[in-house]
Figure 1: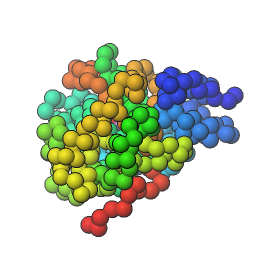
Figure 2 (figure 1 turned 90 degrees about the horizontal axis):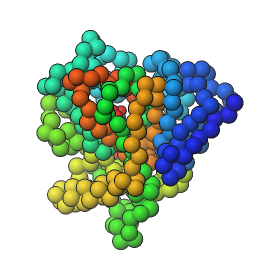
Figure 3 (figure 1 turned 180 degrees about the vertical axis):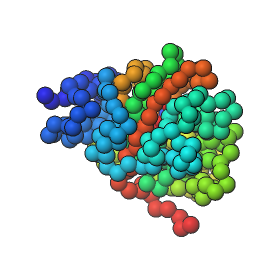
Figure 4 (figure 1 turned 90 degrees about the vertical axis):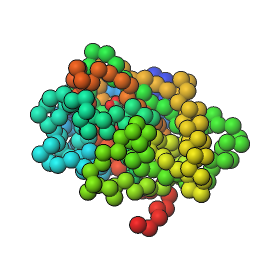
Length: 295
Ligand code: OGA
Ligand code: MN
């Protein structure tokens, strides 16, 4: 049986039917999903029973998996999941809800800011695949913004202004926005900013993208306050309701998005009282978007 994709938001989010991701993919299905990703940017699969192993295997059919930054920065004995599984839950390695002042919880609150996954890496993320194992009774929606449509809707003057700009991204910038700076000393080198083009071309569709993320802290050659004010204005433009889709989670949902064409954020929920267990695999992009400065 072939898959069907029903548009949920103006050709930006598609809902996929006719597929059981727990089973090996029938011939042609991987390519059909990739074509759907190129067109939509976000695909939603419902009622999928996935083990971590199967989630990693399915994700890997689209490219190399990334080791999550949380996986890189925490000790093996403090990890609940394999290092290729980004633990987006509010649980610690003993499956207990994290306390209010837990550093991992506080750092994870950065996901409430609009971002593109791993934009703080020179080779950022292509696809993210987020699987819902336990969902809270209220809140915790994930919102997606269509960065191709956002680029298209810029006025001609702004399009000319952004065209050649290079931005600087670091996870320290997004965390600083929330007043978080408790990074372990031995991982300080991971905070060094990387460079990306502000306007990229999406490989699968050939469309222009406004490549924004809360990890941006500067624009090369610009005074910092001017850069941040401009980036903030662009992000406000890009996250207007007409470009945004909210996903309301059900257990068994797998949502797959293209970080090269979208931004996302999680909305608040009662994370010291209700469990939310979502697990993400991340497929690395093919290469950098801009030249880096030497270390
Ligand atoms: C992520 C992320 C959002 C969420 O997994 O990359 O930002 O809904 N999560 O938890
Ligand atoms: Mn994210």
